[in-house]
Image (cartoon, rainbow, N blue to C red; front, side, top):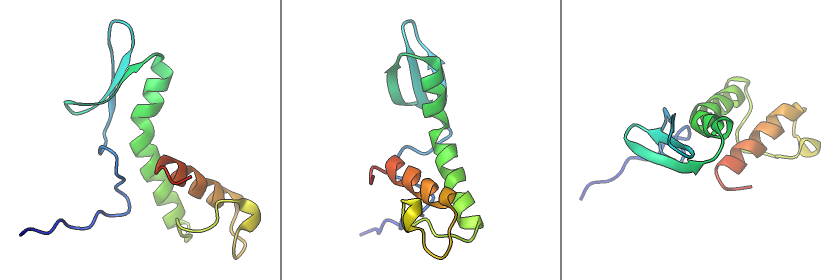
Length: 102
């Protein structure tokens, strides 16, 4: 029996990036390699934002980590612990939203 290694915190339960957009006849699609992540996106700007999501999410995680804060913690800046700046709580809230935990 093989055991699956634990998923690192930087890897979400989403399809790993890099994602790219491709224009179809009537709308846009987002691909990760040959795999279609999303199809039927009506606007190119929306498709570009969706395609950038994995890189944005990883950059957000990295910014919080490298600033010496934890990704777990309050998402409301009024509840920030130890003088954490509001951007850290906002980053946590955005990360939770992207993970479906908000």
